[in-house]
Length: 86
Image (spheres, helix red, strand yellow):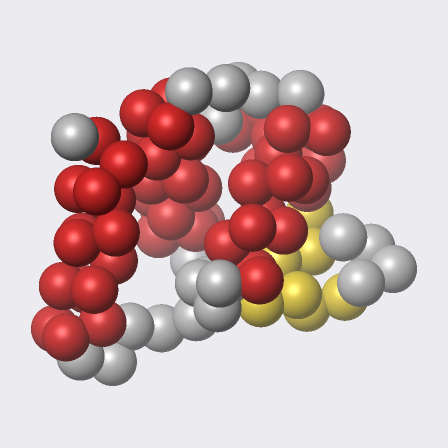
């Protein structure tokens, strides 16, 4: 998967959480961003490891997006994304 595709899919994950407004199971999230469950798992794990998502229930595979409290956090995310899109 290319870095640009990965960045796009990561943004799609945040968009889905924004629309749903609740934690989602991987089996709900994967079809929402049109990726196989295994790819969705890898994306969610990476975002979780970096602190952009958190696991709600490890057994059920649910994840949620933490609230962004400040513009500084949003700016940090955008700098990271721009690095991959160059």
